[in-house]
Length: 295
Image 1 (cartoon, rainbow, N blue to C red):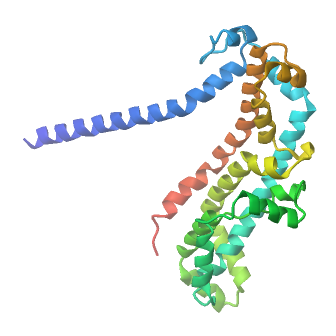
Image 2 (cartoon, rainbow, N blue to C red):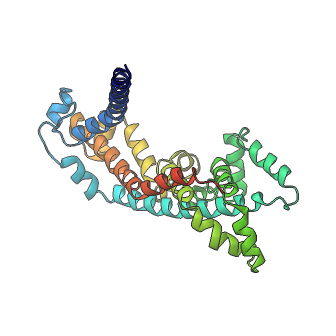
Image 3 (cartoon, rainbow, N blue to C red):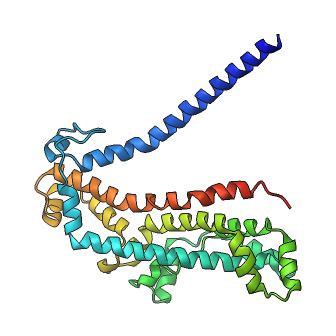
């Protein structure tokens, strides 16, 4: 009887494992199929694209769309500028997030509850587009590259995540350092930051993806096309629906080539940010294991 019970339990376990595997495969397929379709369209000939015959496998393989992107200095300039902008914004945002979160973990900070309340309120209430535009105008940030960096350099949500992680670090480590004469800044640099690599990596990915995919701020505040990020350039191209207008501006001769180039630009702008995740994956795993360690 006991052996039969074990076999039934083992069978249920295997069935449960297979259900989980099938579910994960379906989720992965839902995520990957659009990317595969996009890649196939970017590598297919215009004749097949016009006939809507391309799904998951490229037909009439050619690299004309990618050659057009790589040869046009407009795309390369936007790509380089977006990379520089993403790196600057990510490092500045991490610094601002850390410096804002760190003081809020100290009970001795006067007005800490009031500060936390005001910070939390900003998550639920926004001034709106027009007041933000007028503020940027008053600060002389319109058509200035700094408008793409300064306003979005701090996320309250990410700051709360960082603060919560700092709360989880044992106070005994900080107290021991303070007894040895360490200053607040020394404690931050020597104790808190080395132990915060998982959350720093996670927030770095959040900030990098947010900045890389951002285009609305440039659309509202920037007129100088030299500082258009790649996503805004892509946004403008995808909105050129009129074939004659697109053909004149981008050098297209057929709608199929237009569709292929759009797909190539999307791939061109998506792959770099996807390449970051493998380098940060180990820190995500560390974050899970560190969460299980208690003082």
